[in-house]
Image (cartoon, rainbow, N blue to C red):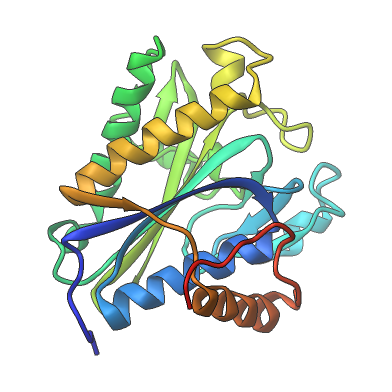
Length: 261
């Protein structure tokens, strides 16, 4: 049951200190739970501390063992659907949108409008990205997400650089997605933003600037009122528990600083 509707304000987390897959997925699930139980609206941008495979919720893990590129990588299972992703040289986002928010009612609208905001920011960086605009039906069963083709994918030319997936729970929705910056050695068939449109050796500070600009633009889509946020001590404890229960990870990432109680 929703305890308090607070989606008039969007909490924005930009935490680009690389974190483990278990931690990242635990925090996303926690934010969805807050959207369900408390009506909280959240947006998060983050990174990964090592190449990690995330499986879609309904995917079998057997294909990983058969792939020389993927075999031996850490694996987590997302609570959202879709194809597997190698999270490596990318910016990842998630948003948790409570029931009652206008964009929670229509899944396609949330995909499309967030992706359109990202395309607009990339245009300001001189990048000619666009929504694909058509479904590649013959590729919908590909194991890897970036081998598939949805009409709301963000592409440069024919190359998909951003894909997203959702999980809906009691009217609330978690949407998260990956913006590939550079091709990963573990998935070299999927080039990224730096490979296709910007300098190949973009410095980290430019990635942070891009993330902050994307966070601002997407947050203003979700709410007219936004606030920069950090995880509170109680939220860190909840994420710790989820990471331990779901993935067997028992430690809070080094460098995390709780805010408040």
